[in-house]
Each structure stands twice: as structure tokens, then as C-alpha cells.
Image 1 (cartoon, rainbow, N blue to C red):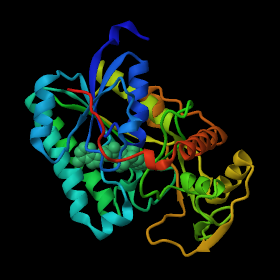
Image 2: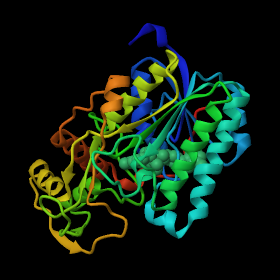
Image 3: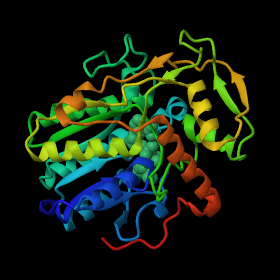
Length: 347
Ligand SMILES: NC(=O)c1ccc[n+]([C@@H]2O[C@H](COP(=O)([O-])OP(=O)(O)OC[C@H]3O[C@@H](n4cnc5c(N)ncnc54)[C@H](O)[C@@H]3O)[C@@H](O)[C@H]2O)c1
């Protein structure tokens, strides 16, 4: 545990969610003091460690933010909270502009008011839309094809503008496909509406679902199925730590792709899941989904060069940790992972 960092309070917005709950553990392990702020709309109180300060609050309620900033002097804010279902964003764009953009503006205002300078933002590969070339580099065109991606790009643009005239320094981290779970299964992916491939494949392996729908096998890819860049959730969190340390050392505000830099097809994921679980995964062939590019792979060179980030976890390890989490959460009973608040630590 690096002594110099002991008990530095870091506000983790969305720390009860999938990626945020991993981040909270890593921050504690590294000697920081994470404070979770979450409205539990898609997160789970049980995914926040008992000894971590938890505030139930909503980004869209400015007074909830004001109350916590008044009490604690934060060194940095990590902002994971968002509505993040692509299909829902097309059906209900106002929800996305309100929760993601308006919520972020409330947060930004209170950070500026209390002079909290370091900010790490969960952005997404969705801001690129259908990329013109792969691997995708940070400077490539940003043409999001849905309100979710547009809401994230708006936030990046606001950060860029505001950081030029205020002390704010930020790192916008554009995740590709986050996957896997905590190596000790303390937390993992537990979205109420699960749209991600690996947990859905594993739900078929565990018998929770009958078959996996594959959306198209006639793409111009080696096996006809879509190719994506799967990055281990712990590797993502490691990048946040590196970005935090770099900002504290005075790094200029910047944007980084976070992907493993390697493409994996839907069929390869299914094969790996069959290997890890020892079960066969029945597949149903569905139609292509509009806006699904054949290949989406990151260039992670910039994060490697400037942050020293090394996303080295194998696909097998990512799928294995996800499987361990999936089987253990079945034992625990998913229903216990509620989105309702239970006794919250004071803060
Ligand atoms: N999971 C991925 O593969 C992926 C890929 C790219 C980007 N991202 C981004 O990473 C972030 C985290 O994703 P995740 O998969 O962990 O999502 P998640 O839904 O599991 O976590 C989001 C958390 O934010 C909380 N939250 C939402 N709105 C809030 C509000 N108004 N006030 C307070 N809390 C609120 C939720 O309750 C939840 O705990 C999101 O911003 C998402 O857009 C995720």
C-alpha cells in the first residue's frame, strides 16, 4: 500500500455499478479512501464493500451533490454513473440527455464550486459510431449513431471547453467492451437488463437462458460474426489509477481509448465459454442489428505510451472470472442483489 496516498478521499459516482464497484476495491487496496455516490438505479448496494462510505444520492438532484461536497474535500472524482443501454437511448433519448448530460452538468458545477480539479470520466467507443478504420485511434472521426453515444460525446466536448478556462483537469477514458469480474468474485457484472455478450453466453451455460441469439454470421470477418475488443474490468480500473496519478502529477487533460487492442469474434467468445464452463452453448441465428459495425477494435497505443497501461489479461481469464461470478451469484440468488437501498453508512 503506497503510504503517500493513504486516506485520500476519491468520490466514485456510480460506485455501486459493475465497473465502479471494481474501482472502489482497487482504490481501497491502493490506500485511497473511496466514497461511493449512487442512486442505485442500476447498481447494487451489496456490491459496495461494507467498510466503504456509501451515499445514496442522485446526480440530477443538485442538493444531493452539494451535501457531500460540503462535508468532504475530494482529491478527485471518478464518474461512472450513466444510463447506458443503446436501444433504450433510441426509444427514450430524453432519459439519456437528462441523466447523462444534465446530471454531469450538476456534478461539474459543484466540482468547480468546491475547487475539485481532477476528474476521470467513463466515456465509450460508442462515440466513434461506425469507424472508418480499425484499430480506432483517439483522433478518428466521432460520429455516434445513437443518443447514448451522443450524450457521452457532449460530455467530452463540455469537458474540453470548460477545462480551457478553469483549473479542471480530466481524463476521458473511452472503454471498448468491458468484461470479466473481480478475481475473488466479490463483485461482477449484474446488470438488470443485460445486453453484453459474455454474461449472456454464461447465462446460457448456467441454464438460466435456453439459447444465445447471434446477430448475424454473414459479416466480412474471418468467421462471419462481429469482432469486438474485450477488455478486462480490472485492467480498466488499473488505467483509472494510472490516469489519476498522472493528473495528480500535472498531466494535461486528455482522452484515451481503453481496449485490449485485439479483436475477438462472437464465435470465439462462445468457444471460449464452452471451454471454460465445460457446457455446450446452443445458438439461435438472428438478424444483423442496425448500427453494429463488423469490427470494432481499439488502438490502445496512446494509453500505453502516456499512462504506461498494459492490458494483458487473457480472454480465458476474463471469461473464467465472469463464470465464477455468474455461478456464485446464482448460489447467492440474484434476487439478493437488489437495487433497493439497505442500511447506508453515514456521510
Ligand atoms: N460496461 C461496459 O462495457 C461499458 C463500455 C463503455 C462505457 N461504459 C460506461 O462505463 C460506466 C459504467 O458502466 P457499468 O457497466 O458499470 O454501468 P452500471 O449501470 O453497472 O453502473 C452505473 C452506476 O451508476 C448509477 N447511476 C446511474 N445514474 C445515476 C444518477 N443519476 N445518480 C447517481 N448514480 C447513478 C447506477 O445506479 C449504477 O450503480 C457508464 O458510464 C457506461 O456508460 C461501460
